[in-house]
Image 1 (cartoon, rainbow, N blue to C red):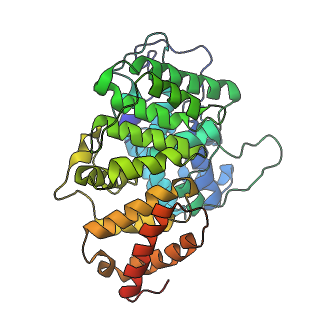
Image 2: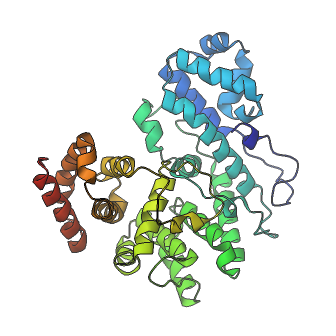
Image 3: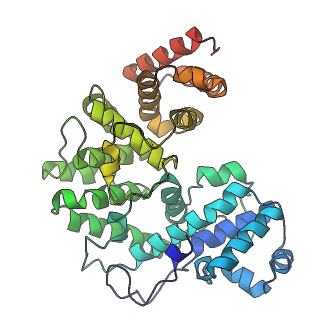
Length: 386
């Protein structure tokens, strides 16, 4: 992974010249490294001695001024192993590679020339992002703590003095990031299906901008005919899913509910696409994907159904904005995999507890409640209490 996250050259992958005021190249990975150090715990002086580096080197890593990705691959592997032996959470150490990729993508978007967009070279149009990479980028542009970091660490709610509590970029850089996204979206709007991946990933990342009126933006696209989809899977189906998720992230679940009812339910390819995408998004299908065509795979999926059910179950009562999509996906997964609930009693028990919590929520749509009640009775029939 370190080879994939090399220090950027004088020109970006989009062919543009870098902006004079550049962001710290390793801000996300550097901050995650600081979180890891604090979990061991070690002071900067102590960890520098443990790793055999100067304190100034370690400070450069944590500040992002000296990107971890510029470390030789062999040294980086050795350092990761050393951190785990010192007591660092293995999950967080493993996330350093993801954080370095997020830094690379963030820098390329920030330094892209919005006046000249090369759609075939844009970093968000050539690689299907996973949840962890997306959430790492979101950490830097919105301050929203990624769930995987929150679950493996204790980060002080507030720090005294000038010490940052997240890798959040300064306001000017955040504004530049979101402006660059919107410029890419404008350039990709007329490019047809070839730019579908770029559009949907740009739209989703834009939802981290709380100053952005997503509803008006997508309404304008709809009026111009740029948002069209038909039942069943297509590149436009994947776009519509991301649009619906973007609006749900900003507090409006209406389009997401309509998308589920009109573009997923009763369409086998769409149901498979939804589950395939979940598996990729959650890291259960670890194959790198350069486009969305993997969603169409219907037979012999490259992911484990029990593992996917577990991942969906533990989030069922947490991701409030996406509750309808989680409920539908759990219901569809159980319907499509006979005897799934019996394959792992621990997962079934976990799901039973979450279902009970969500059913008490009065904000569930009638359709989501109906599906969740089906899951409820299936769990009871299997002997799992709710």
